[in-house]
Length: 328
Image 1 (cartoon, rainbow, N blue to C red):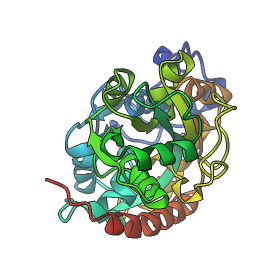
Image 2: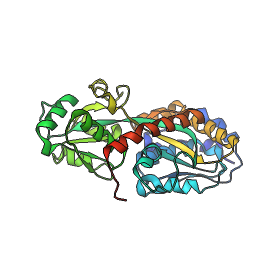
Image 3: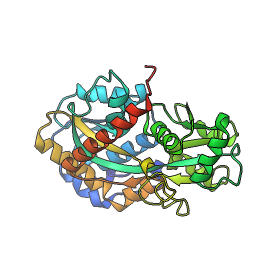
Image 4: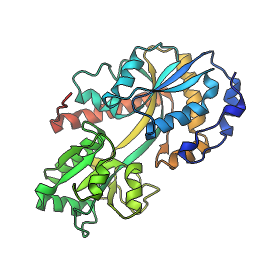
């Protein structure tokens, strides 16, 4: 039986301590002898850290609860594993939105049907992207409109880096190029290393999650032109949104959400939703996410299902219009 003493959040997100709002979960075992939260990425990244924060806060959900990292194929392996897991609430996945609402439009063969093979539980967090430029771009380029003009005048230097091809980050750059009428060469880095090439003047711009680029903006190494969220970012209140910058079509936010296998009984769905929301709505958890430049967001299974469907429908035409075809 789990004890209240063990309900601690990880210190890796900035010194998190006891989570009093979810202490009562220690008295509410579900009957699962072992539960797993699948994550499609290796240890140490933001989604892995957030998954471990969740699991620590949910120790009362199961006698044994672990994070099971399944890196590979851009996060797709974890979803494939979830599809074939028991539909009893004991195995779940914490996944970024892209694997569910973008990848189905990108890959001909995924190994899962995003709208049929899973049961939505709730979002956990969301965050915008940050469009930044580096020393390759003249210092007088201070706005997104300035940058578009510069790209039009310097087509051979109009390059941008992101973490991955076929991602929301990639297609945000595609939409900027379409809106501005210029060619924008995409360079996928398979991670955050695009920031280093930006700092070194080897590429013109990057589009990354705000937390990835933020330290380099704050140090003055790179310049932030716009965030892609609907509201200005708390860490960068002076940076306009893409809507304020005149490019509303670029609005986009990535979310992380929890899914169960399809046909999971409704009582298991509701129990897991309650357990996760108790953690996500606690102030100490929100504070931990804020240290990662991530916003806590949760809701009902029905609300999450509607979000998945609306994002799925939105990104389909964007991907198709881009003409992008993945190598794998």
